[in-house]
Image (tube, rainbow, N blue to C red; front, side, top):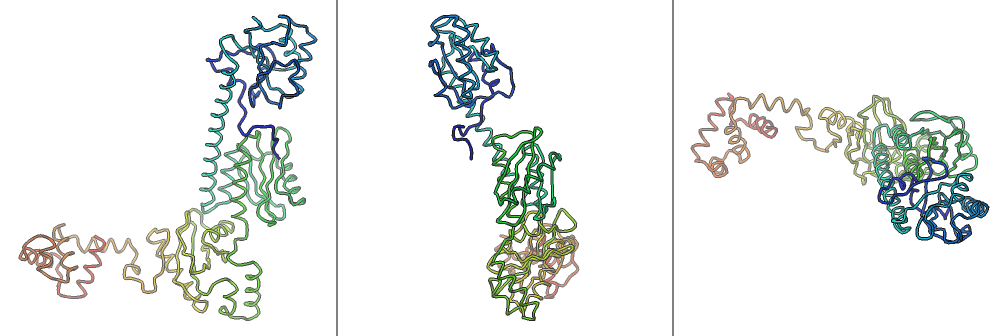
Length: 480
């Protein structure tokens, strides 16, 4: 559990506060550590502020509790040691109105005990310093929220790719600046991304999560921060992350990745696993498809054939993710095509990174026919470069001709006609050869329509009274 004393805002680098020219702060003692950070600012004139400190503070004092300008070395040693013991991040000393300079003994005590000592000039108020701290915290919080939001969006986009698991791991590794690895149920490495580091220690931590049935675990070794996240509900997959640093938003980013990977690697069910197992056993023992269909949760289904756009062969995990997106765990991964059996009441939608062919709805006795329909629809989708094509119960003529061939035929057939003749012919055919209605529609004289149609027939060298010719022209004109 997080420490309740730590505020829900990122710490502010002490260097960022010192860089504020409007404050005029100056470090005069203690280590110059670029990683030094403060969580908040607090003013106190207590001789022993220890009971009132939570840790991580920039403690501000004007030295009211110091009766003399110089003070005694022993009293300052005790004072600084108590601040250090309470976890104070730095001490800010105001040189007005009580003291004109910072007592040398205080400078020596801070140097000796490694506490940064900041000189606060007379024109800078403690409230101004505190306000600057909170402003820097708000900026850091906003930047961190933006970073986490951008990471969530990129992880979600990666999960929709045709190779979702490697894509999510690549994004996670890039966002945390480290290494991300997915371990399978047997502890074997399934996929990884980023610069490999701390692999033995990370594998050990992931095994520990599995053995103890924990949700998460963290550790650090050799300058690396390690984290392990159990995926799903007992499926045995574990996400491991190793990074050289641990920013406040890294846990949130890794948790989002863990949720996405849980969905991608888990068993997405439209019915219970036990019901599907029963259906499989009954089929193996001789039951018909119609007998086991009720166990799968529906009577009518569509068959989806899918091919990934970016890779030659479908990935099993990517296929599982596709099934989850389509709303069905009934997925068959072939050498080139993934087949998914989807309940008819779940309308398949286009999926990024995939080309889909969808059959007409069918009962179990028609699944073989639906499988062939999905195959033809996929071929049509690939030929037309469409993301998804549905097979119609009564396919149109256009469905039987590849789009590129149809367009080429239309251009060749109508090439002799000028635009005015093409428009006149289209309108005339749409109005079933009516001269008067075509003239009204085009706002020309009926004799003009007759002249244009006659000229079109001559240029095309076709008999426009022939129904077959009209059908062929109408097909072409719809693509012109």
